[in-house]
Length: 117
Image (cartoon, rainbow, N blue to C red):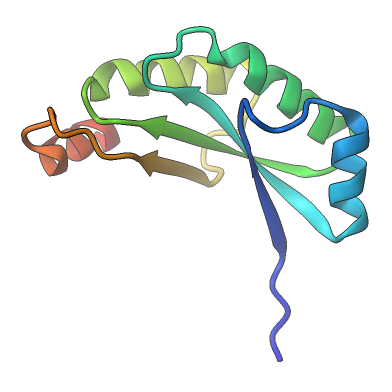
């Protein structure tokens, strides 16, 4: 049987404590995907900074995530990459994009292409 790495996705709802991350490590989680920005929340980077710092101090691999509704893809990308750079994430590393539905977005595929561009 193939053994896969265990990965945790963390965001503002995740406890911001060293003890929580130590528990994750005890059950074999060594990779953490940190949500760096979320559409509509300009202060989300403070949460991302705390999670990134704790995970790095415990020698966990950190990866970045962007959470978006695709309403303002250019703004979302700009904010995400400013936090990405500020927190010292490496360009070329893996990034996860979480798109959640918004009925007011007329052409989500076009907006996703704009975001990725």
